[in-house]
Amino acid sequence: MSDPIKLGMVGGGNDASIGAVHRIAARLDGEFVLTAGALSSTPEKAMASGKALGLAADRTYPTFLDMAKREARLKDGIEAVAIVTPNHLHYPVAREFIKRGIHVICDKPLTSTLSDAKKMEVAVRKSDALFILSHNYTGYPMIRQAKEMIADDTLGNLRMIQVEYVQDWLTEPAEELGVKQAEWRTDPARSGVGGAIGDIGTHAYNLARFVTGYKLDSLAADLDSFVPGRRLDDNAHVMMRFEGGAKGMLWCSQVAPGNENNLRLRIFGENGGIEWSQEDPNYLWYSPYGAPKQLLTRAGSGAADSANAVSRTPGGHPEGYLEGFANIYTEAAKAIRAVGAAKPIPTDIKLQGIEEGIEGVRFLTACVQSSKRNSAWVSLWQV
Image 1: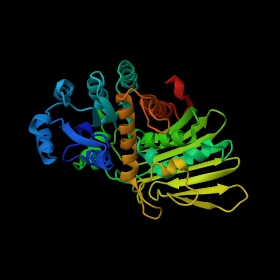
Image 2 (image 1 turned 30 degrees about the vertical axis):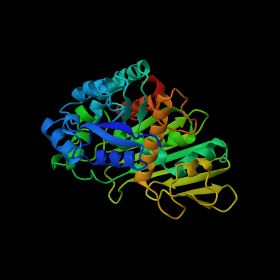
Image 3 (image 1 turned 45 degrees about the vertical axis):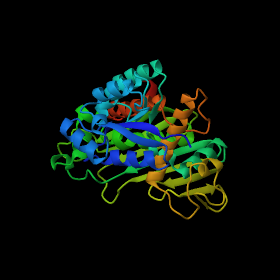
Image 4 (image 1 turned 180 degrees about the vertical axis):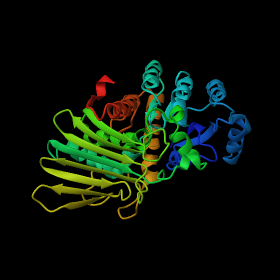
């Protein structure tokens, strides 16, 4: 096995939950080693977080710019950086590393505004470094199975694409109660134009696009802020028209009591349908029209090659969120190693990048525009 890829991280300090998830995912298969970090926008917190993670003092930086400049000059500097900051920092942080040839693994959504997304695209196109968007739900084995089944025309022409991502953690005004994750997610200056639609709606949309391959033509959205005084949406209903005639609906909410991370995908074609739930991810229901419903299991009988390729344990041993997330990092490592060896990136790697990132920001921007126009239909490609 090659030496682990030297990884840096921006954001994700002691009081940030998603940073810890990224670090676990990055090291699960031994492909990365955390070497440097600018882990907080507050220098004192950044240094304390680096110490807690065992980073060397001279590889723990007060700002991301200090980190980008020095790491690019070091002989043993980082090869890739994970960006796990609030949305408004994604572009300025990524820009500094990308232009110095350091590969970027960035949280979604791509940026907080469409203008920054377009600037990000220019920066990525100018660089030889890879840009990878961490839409982690695309890493689940049974999602890969669903994608393969649709690509193989198992369901025939698709008719209906239903996706929802429902939570309840913002049912109360958590942003007023000192909950850091709620504070920035409900702040337009840091989150961007979308609340729930940007935070989890983009995940749901990306998953539907990833699995089906169907391109969205237009949408009509109804966004609400049910909690009084909340400045961004906490619930969204979106109707979607796909090229080729398929229709879809997306519901995302962070104010639905009784739901933790209820991400579900249902797809129906002329020959059958499939159903998958993120909270029970090792199973995929397949319903061929006119025949009994079938349960397909991760690493079980009937599992597709694409699903088995990202499975680690025998069937019946549950794999979940961390393993799915780790698949994104492991595929990122394969892509980075291929680029480093001047070889083509393997075709079985299914990473999301700058194009999917821009589309995600277009999607949430179109949703906001549609809702402001009394749920008028908006073309995704004219925003």
